Image (tube, rainbow, N blue to C red):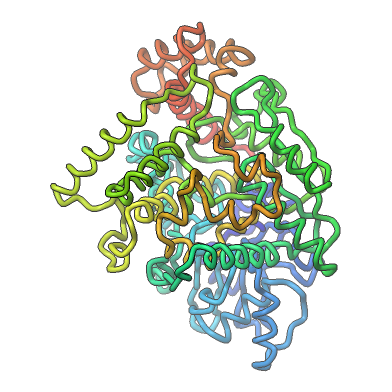
Length: 616
């Protein structure tokens, strides 16, 4: 896991090195820069994980010197690919996945990415053809940005590494649309800074003769599979796939652990790790590191459930009390590092992964992706009502599941009756059907999209186009700010294809969301966690902070001259009025608090990005 930077043609060394060093947090262990015949500059900040010796140094050249690669990510199945390449005559001088990646490209060309099980943003320069090949992993776990600046093509893992090449920084023309649609811009090319674009997930491309040509190499709808007919066989196959996914992701030459929330997904992940380590002596003994964010006295605290899991597995845990006052003075710098907007403060997540690193752990296996794959969010649950609309028993089951996921804190989270939920949804859905409206998705015209049931169509969009891409971006930043790599077993492409091929009833039913995960992992988890119905999620207790620890800061901010003169904040007076209602305790509405935070975050982003360019 690292940070990459490149320019075509090459760049002046001091400028390039300064730009590369804006990403030191992504790769604190070492760095490398190569200027190749004035045609290209390639730079790499390294976080050493596989083959921590100098043999894994990047930029890495092929023995012929024709090819050079810079790569951010991990190829988990590199050992299997290496064996295949060895039978074809390739010789390896390192034990790194980077060398495997490069020789896979030489052997199979641009189709090599279809063999990779992993996450990546990569660039390979061919000195003979003067062509730069670029690729980003299937779902966009690893970031990649690019810009055309005065005849120079610049690409990097983070926008800040492109800033030094720009004459001036300007806010994007689409900024206010992105602020309003925080979950919808990450899967587009839009960026908050004018002139910078996002390289799309699941795409490859090449830059040659001054032109970038992109093409899509992966569409999940092209990779749907035949699933077993019986639910019991589906559970067994899911268990096998998940265990193998975790096994591949436990490959590491450094200490691994997990960020454990106490929810089903992260608990399932560490339980699988424990089972694999117990039954296979070839795994490192240094995996028993669980880190738990704790929010004492708030509705977001799940530390009790996390302790049930670690006690059940017989391992220790590090509990991190999230005290915002300890790090709030670094908020502006965190916005500079984070680069984007979100509905809640990045502080708890940054603090958690900071503790991970401080305790000597460099890699975590976390549970991201399961909610979007398997309907872990309450809004997705209701979409299955259309699939069950002629079945009274299943309809009641779905409504009970929906109500069971609601947070019990009624002051901050509202609740509607089941009958109202049902009729509101069905009437709205029937209206859309009558008007001929399809489920919103960039792929809704694909022949296989119509073969998915209604819930699966909704989850497809959530996974590929809105919620998950945003969270992947966030967790890349939270972790890499601290030099930590996150691996995500639920996002193995084999699991994604399998789950997208399942009927809705395998994902939700019999009283529970994520039904197949619960049944598959139940043998390894405490029952209180496997069959727990409420879902909280890892976020900031923004209401509690506004009314207690950070009350003065919020009040000072919304009344400051800078805030009220910021062009990136809309409806200043309305925001002040709504924030005041929360600050004085007139309301504790969580949704209103997130609305206030979105406006404050735009102001903080402006201070951190547009008005300060000297941070490294």
